[in-house]
Image (cartoon, rainbow, N blue to C red; front, side):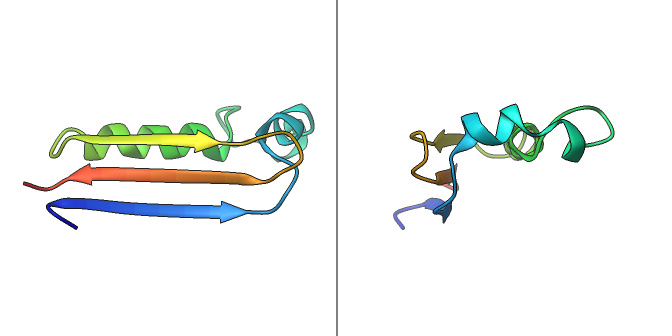
Length: 72
């Protein structure tokens, strides 16, 4: 819309704080989580187009991840 690509993904889970506390058994080979990988990918996109990513995660109310890429 108006030269800006926006993508949001949401769930109705427990939120990132609770996930981070129990993540040790499911972390990536580098010890990170999916959130770190998402941030890294947004930085790579940012090499070509201005981009930002943010997470909304109130305790026990799920998580919403939004990526914006400015295309113009």
